[in-house]
Length: 194
Image (cartoon, rainbow, N blue to C red; front, side, top):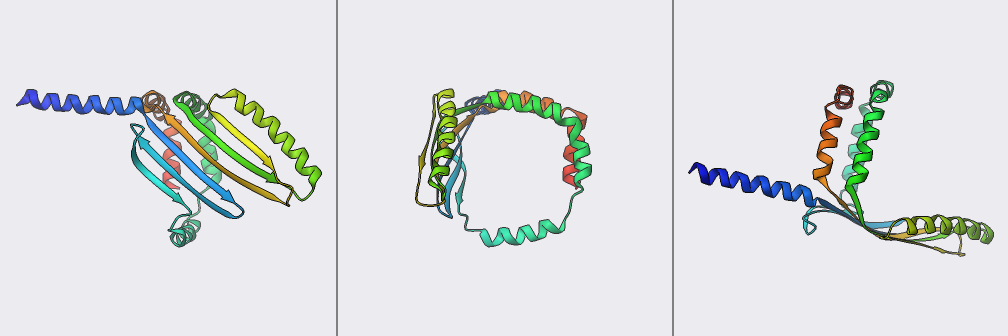
């Protein structure tokens, strides 16, 4: 009986390690035209199983305005939080370096339609945007970002599909190292207590 229980626990631990090694996939698909914004944020485990999904615009817009009124009543002392956060900056910098190493960009496809009222300003700024996008597109093999000028007045529209994979197993030691610091724990308790 004990051997069977031990095997079940071992299989569960092995499954959790495989899950952490394969990681989490985050997909963000959006489309913005004029003042309308639609999109979807999905979090997937094992690259297929949907754990969390959020649609934009949300159906709960009325509820969020009520929550914002309640949260504005509770004020936090920003100076106290900044005083607590200052010694933690080096720890957060090390954590962010580890976090960036754990992220892998699978797809970065975005298209921007940009225009201003002046034709010359539109041409000048779209040239700057194209120059910046040339650097971004050549720096990563999965990046396909494009821009298109619009000479029909002031316009900023965008659409895109973005997918990231995060290897959580590599992130655990960095997170434990971050939380083990006394200054970071005092910052967390300061944020929680207000």
